[in-house]
Image (cartoon, rainbow, N blue to C red; front, side):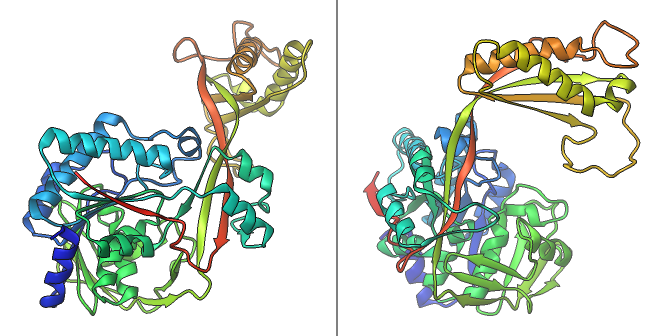
Length: 464
């Protein structure tokens, strides 16, 4: 019997609290061994880990590459595979390979298969793919079943064709289907982080409001604790609530820290929208059991009558080169909003003598407006700033040409009040201009309406 079916049968036969381990908020950046060992000692019923996010930006989705280092990713996967197989419990991983498209999922599966061969592990592996077929998207667009949200412009057919990769964020249904089919290890492409932890307790009939609230918290491991961290967290779920406990004794899950986590990646602390419905936290309670554990109750769930899938796609903009420099001249800092456009115009006149202006050139001045788009008026200027220049051009060669020219002319650009001609910039290393590869942007971030939101996510099962 597979791990998922064994756990389902055992918990159905003896209705008891279910123990779930959130192993990592983003697998591949390290799973602390002492906390994982402490979690294993508590004999959990499943181990889950999120592996991806849009927090890393569009480039990894566009390029089809992992954000994490291969060696660290392999180490984390090996730890969790051995932990789950040693206990004969399901291991569930979502958003494989950072962005969850076919290249990311396939790279993750290759590592899992290699570990299984090298370590003599045998298990039934379930795979859920999240890539969206373009003909289906074109048809949905023509039928008015794709809509914008979060300020994105209306989707066009041209943007569908231009995206390097397009994924859909799967909800709980595909995970539920895979676990019910009987797997030991389940690895999914792009998915809602809650789905990783919600599917198994949902199959067991635990209240969905509690299940989703718990899943939203433990997918980030011990980030909800004081101090927050990446150590494994243990949730014990029953029909009335769930209890949270970090597996690192130095981290405390307090009522305030757990409640505050409701704002993580959310603008509304009272609700959360998922593909399958919405979570209502207005009646949620957070009660300390001791100085390290908090019990949570009260969340309600409202299933959706119009389920949607969030689409994510990334389009290549061109090749990027950057300039890294600093400045400590108070006159340069005070006049930088005049100096930078002036230097950019000089560069344009030089590099566009025999070809069009086919690039974009931007600057960020860290210390003033590198992070804040609108610093407060009248704020005192810093004594030194970090200057980041960015150019995006059709080719790497063109981007390097523009940025190298920019470096030289910004370095020596004259302006009223300048006292020295030796240079306006300081460079931390050489070369200060660096080609960093292709640049992408999210061109698809839309909602797809489907009568069956589970249909686009096929399940494949193999035995290793």
